[in-house]
Length: 118
Image: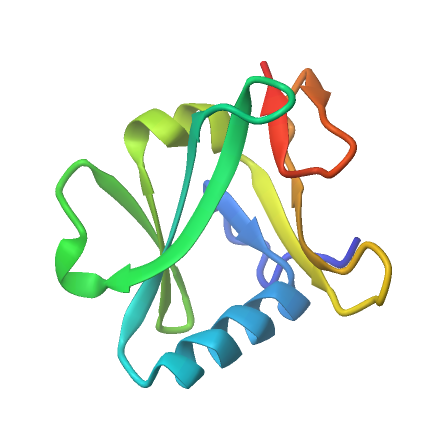
């Protein structure tokens, strides 16, 4: 796993590789979007990660916003209870590539790495 982009404490951490990838994906959308990260019920282990771009105008006072050199990651406070300290990494490996979640709050994770339990 690669290191976070900065040592400044943030609720959700991004590796340099993940930051490069989300900025690239954002640029391909052609809009000024933020990345919303959260959890929902379901998945092999009880809860699954969700991640999607959304318009910055949808940020609410109930959201926590983490700024990475102008790129914003948004997480609602309820999800942040389960995600605080999450490290989001990215790999372009042919097998096992894509975004990887390392969640210090998870007591169990599924084999695919996309769901967890607490």
